[in-house]
Image 1: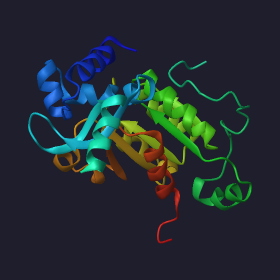
Image 2 (image 1 turned 45 degrees about the vertical axis):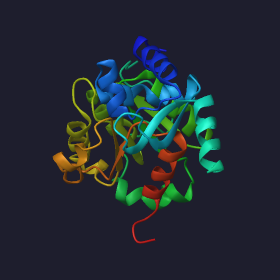
Image 3 (image 1 turned 30 degrees about the vertical axis):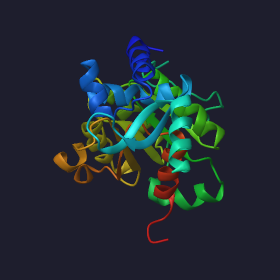
Length: 82
Length: 160
């Protein structure tokens, strides 16, 4: 993986259990949103991250977010249990 | 060998560079009867993205050609006449829009379907991409299964 992909993956894991939309994740990391989107698929297919629709922990908008696989399972479980 | 136009599949390329062919419109029916595999061009400056999509679409029965920048995308498209072109917006040399305009400007490629991938969610609205010859705009990240669904929809004859 590229250094950018590794950095984004690390940020997603460090943010867990919080989930940030692409816009907020880019702002938090000082990166451009389209750069994060460009590496997202590699992270999903090769780094075990997931792509789900969730409420962003910062801006509260419902949007696609990158999550660690454990975070995605936890979030799905909590949603199903409510 | 043209390094800019690296083919992902190693199948014999006898049918790739066809000399003295009739126009695409005239040969569409006979070619369909021969059931040639659909050809898809993946144009993206990320080798990871190209490889991922290439492996996936090969496994789904497509013949895949790739390009790593806008100029290569134009050349590969004209050489291989893909049925569907998946092109990244932000690429070196020419961006996806310019490359699409040049590809669609060639009479042989006027019927090719183009999917533009972008990391800029609002870009389609701002730039009027459909007028440039882009058939669909998808926001990254676009998983292979989702991309295949759009590709197959575009491959359907219009009105069906």
